[in-house]
Image (tube, rainbow, N blue to C red; front, side):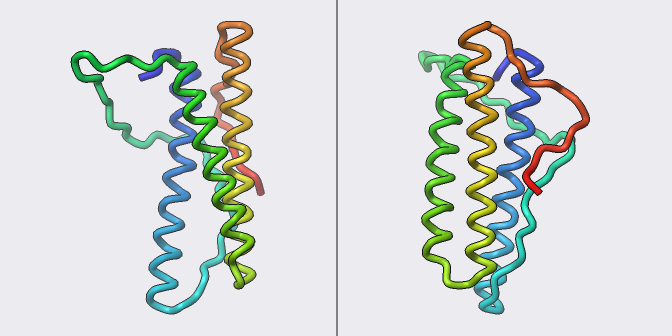
Length: 140
């Protein structure tokens, strides 16, 4: 629902990251259920591309969130995801499992940094600082 093109692009890229996490975790579940084996997770590095997003319109009487609200919610959720993956890394006995969870935690920390940077830019200058380029965002 963000109107600013830079904000839309940032949220789009982050949604692609999270979709890849979801897909890899589904693959992991399938591998653990069928073979009892962890899969190798090399990390997420996505080039700019578009996935269809479902447009949600607020129902009558429903409060409209601002861009700042969306950023605050995103920051909170990325922190929770990072903490969860770090705790799972500590519990995992398999080296591939530990590595996968550590990488996921690192990626969530990167997402949190991206959101924090945008929050402070928007709060302090009123401007989205996200640069729209054909760039690769990732860790590794």
